[in-house]
Image 1: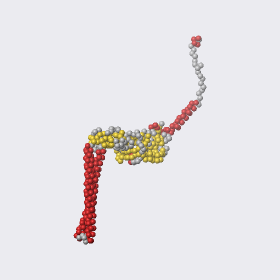
Image 2 (image 1 turned 180 degrees about the horizontal axis):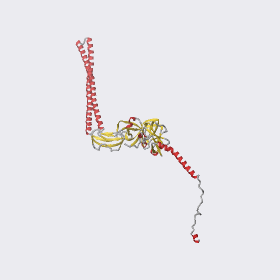
Image 3 (image 1 turned 135 degrees about the vertical axis):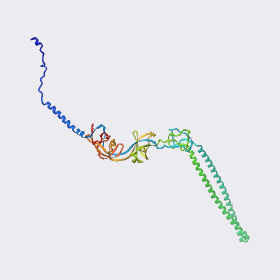
Image 4 (image 1 turned 90 degrees about the horizontal axis):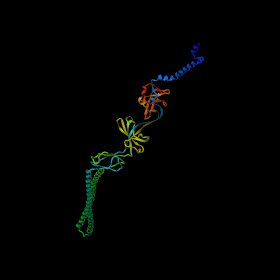
Length: 431
């Protein structure tokens, strides 16, 4: 009996907890909550599912760019890269053949009238000396001729004066003969002789006076002719002197010397380029404008020249009449003084204002114009659906494009590339 008591094992009845009966209401409440949540989720997801079902394509929102159509003033312009060039950049040439001596170096600052180079032309110098000698000889001949003509004119006037004296004497003898003939003391033949002497003296005086007057005219003519010859020779001398003066090459403007085109002491021919002088006080912008804008360009158009963050007003002063490499060359000039820190061949952005369209419907410019051909746009609704719509566009600027049909102010359209849409009628934009 004792052995059996020692081998008895205790049970777990002391650890057991008595549980209350489970209620049947709680599982039903949980099931109802789950069903309500599922119905709410389905109700909320129905529009999204409908949009997804109606959409032909689905594109993430972060892959597109959206802009709003609005009204405003559209300025049509074109922006090109311009190159700064000197408005005044004369090239100097050798005026005659000879040996050149340079007086300046490339890049040296020069002033107007400063001697830049000289050309030694022995042939031209010799011609000048010969012509100067011939001119002096001609001038001396003219002076000698004038003296001789004055002397001859003096002799002619002397003869006329002597003829006048003889005429006076003949008149006196004629009066004496007349008085004597009346008194009968002078024979008739002597009276007639006095008349003949008077007539002879009158003829001699007339011829002497006419001869002196004619000689004066002749002297004046010959002197004038000689003066014309001297003047002609003087003009030839002046022209030759001008050519010799051009052997000294001077700077026509204030500026700096560009590249030297010849070597020191080189033999040059006539009209050989020697050097260029750049006037750094007057700059212009040389621009290359795309051919598509050629018909819209006109001299006098306003322009805007950008140098960093600073803008300068300009005007289009020249347009090339021909197209080269699908571009039109133009020249833009600063309206006011050009910046002082400009450099030759510096690149500046130039914006040319072609025309202005006030109070038009417009939207931000984007790749949708190229990928959609400018004929379609995707209008984005509040539900995230983008619907394809045909549009019409007008003028274009660098930042905006005019909308002439198919859209209204306030419409939101996709302005990025339309290639991901694959020409779908509707596109769902997902987050």
